Image 1: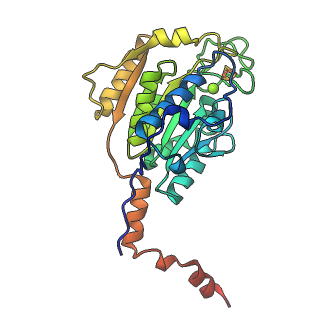
Image 2: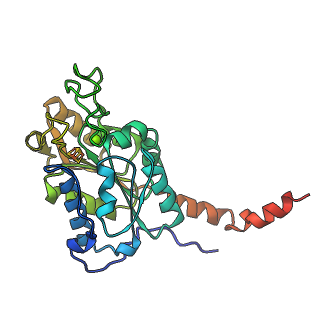
Length: 297
Ligand code: SF4
Ligand code: MG
């Protein structure tokens, strides 16, 4: 029995970035960095030429999780922290679709933090865009897993007591096969990383640093812009140690490394599942009706 190997199905159409924007006006605060993420995503979709009929955007809960409202695609607005597992299910059920998750640092790395390593190690064939503003925005300014220690928030009025989690190091550690980072205001780099991430076969993680002018006075657009430092053009993206070193070296200087940090090929979860089905002789052996018949007294 021949089972086709799963691929990223990039059904090509010729559409402008505005064609991927639906009729709903984006409603974030004035100056919010998430507008840059949306613009970058729309531009990437246009550059790839993805057919919106084969595009699914999935989110959890948070300001950033509104993003699918504004995109001309199929979409699922799921539970807090659960966008990843839902998106994994969508991708496995319909391997011909392009699945992109958008969400915030709280959604993805606090309540949803238990899911992140597993999507990475399984190499789920989808793109995860983190809109990282180092704070909970929707619920009005609580400390998030990526908040700086010195930041005073509604839940840490005297400053924090924890070291911030680094989503990029986290994803590199757990086996994501594509990892990039950019300031959301650098739409050119953000859209380039999203485009390459969506074309990548495997779990693509892109951290977009996105200012929240309403609840984070430290990580302003200007602060992010000044801290960002594009990785050396000679950086070897297939070298995990080099990627880790680039991140740690930049952090030691108070900088944020941007650009494509890591990219390798590894079998994806949908590919492994197709191979397994073929190895066991197809779905026949798992015919639910037969199992029910066998269970009957
Ligand atoms: Fe953006 Fe912050 Fe406003 Fe939310 S609260 S829309 S993250 S600026
Ligand atoms: Mg946030």
